[in-house]
Amino acid sequence: MLLSLFGAVESGLIYAIMALGVYLSFRVLDFPDLTVDGSFVTGGAVAAISIVNGIPPIMATVLGALAGFIVGCITGIIHTKGKINALLSGILMMIALYSINLRIMGQPTLSLIKETTVFKQLEVIWAKSGMDSFFNGLLQSLGADRVPSTWVIVFFMIIVTLAIKFLTDYYLKTEVGLALRATGDNQKMIRSLSANTDSLIIVGVGVSNGLVALSGALITQHQSVANVNMGIGMIVIGLASVIIGEALFGKRSIAIATIAVIGGAIIYRIVVTLALRVDFLESGDMKLITAILVILALVTPKIIQARKEKKRRLRKRAELTSQAEGA
Image (tube, rainbow, N blue to C red):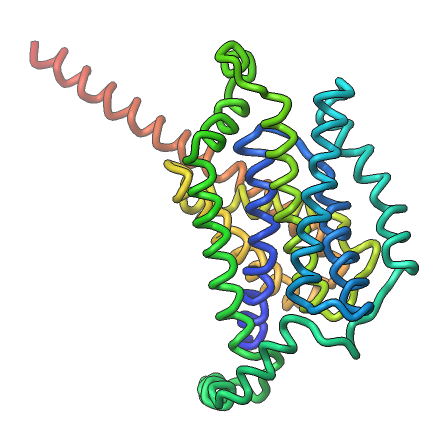
């Protein structure tokens, strides 16, 4: 159980980067972007083929993120310049990316088991430092009989994810970021102030998919395999992370909203991991579990709010009744 939770936190931190990208497009920009399912694979495909061809893993990861940014910009251009519905633009790009990703990899599945990845490099450095044995011994003393992954991946991903979170917060508070948020709230108003909303949408969707592709590049190296179908359902997972995080932690400010998204991604992976340990559930039920989680995250706050409102009305009625009786 402990090892499963450890692995869930590890993967949750990587998927949190993808969830931040989804948050930018869906919540900040109000752009229903389905490119995510394709750009996630694009990031992984570019990183994988780059590593196979001898490019250093860190540079390969950056190239994967850059490819996602370009893909997102194309989606934005199709929507703004081609005057195509935002939802349809994402669908068209997602479909096109299936073939493009196949072209990039040259085959449906590309293995990195024999290649050096970012995480393998980190594990080597961590093992040489002696910290690996210390933390593995600590984990085993808590009841784990084996350690499937090292602590360094969790520490590394905490640093990377939080760095991206703070950069996102800073970006959304800059002049361009404020204009981006205003575009998502009211395009007509921001356009009346002579702002170029088309450019803002293109850049915003580009940054969003860049983060998604970065997550895809990291997941590919974490799993040591890139698959053309690994992006299926990513948009649902991203939305689930956003909705769960907002339901549990709120969204009173940008800083709280982004940390809520990260928390939502981790909690999502933990809940899925625990659910799959139930005897009657199988790995193929993960999409069903995701759908149920999203429904609960959407419905539960409304039920709680309705109960609070009902109690408030009853209390108000009681106060009015007592006042009337006293008069």
